[in-house]
Image (cartoon, rainbow over all chains, first blue to last red; front, side):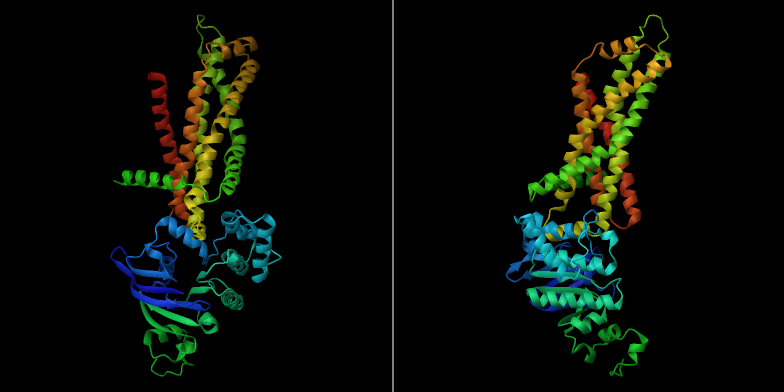
Length: 252
Length: 247
């Protein structure tokens, strides 16, 4: 479980995150949604320590993450897996070398044990026949799957996904969403997904936070999101004209 | 103020880079990869430049030393001194600042903008150490070898060109390159070469590591790496020469 308590962040004069609090549950896919510029990625980067926070607390189970020093954060991050927007696979390494990298770095496993784990992760993301390809030789969806395999290779307790569907067609997006959900349930991870894709919300949104202008505007799940009266959330959910016509809430 | 900011940030980055590696085995492998990447891949350009420069120095010396009071073996002597003291250590290092420095800055800069450095941090890897330490150590280690090869090829090029063009005889040239040899000058050359190797790699890594933005900024980082790397090589050359020759 991850608890976010009253966190704020400013870049110069511009307040990007304003007193946001929420709880992210273990074994569930927690989605943070919002328009571009609403502060979603900033929150994610604060949660993993890539951005500092101005005030508040980020608590991983019993550990107050933002109070750890750099070395402690570095050690703590071994429990974190992250799927970056562009995949962030290392260009100079093949798919299997990418996945093996954290294992080689932080475990004393034998080569065989490491590559057994690599193959297991590749099977999980259904990419087992692409071991020796370089990232440049992969399609967008394959890159995301390879990056997901790398993120879970060290068996993390927490998985962060920054817009996992960006740049993917709707069909591949569904595959990636289902994969993330399956892995979350199977490994009982606390998964946080930053997205503005409503398909993802309706498919795997077990716990959904809506950010608006740096503030938490709404919290619920995929069942309640369509029946909300929150004006800004409805604007976001029914952004497309053809969807507006299907909205049962005539106040929109 | 900007100057002091960069100096401070550079040394803080180097402090992070020179911290204890997470796993020595991985770093050693990376070190040898960098030795190959920085050193072996530069051999071609060093061979061509050194050979022809040695030849040109020999011909220029031969046709400049027209006084009958100056013996012709001075041609070999001049080529040797030019190659060992200045051309191989400094000029080749300046060329490497362009080739290797630009390469390192663009590689690390691209990793920064494509979030690969963030990915390393999230894994719990000290990205500064993993990316920079093997490169700097490889630069310091391999640069003296490259320069030694350059010295040899330059002097050999001088011999080939000198004899082929009739600028001097084989005997005079070989006598000249052995005349008044002071071994400490080799020590001076290799010492400054190792320092230049550290400057080339660390300055380039610094500019790459702090790249912000997109492809345009990666290009700017590469340019800065070459410009500041070259300036620092010249400044360090002056200081080291002052120390060795004056004190």
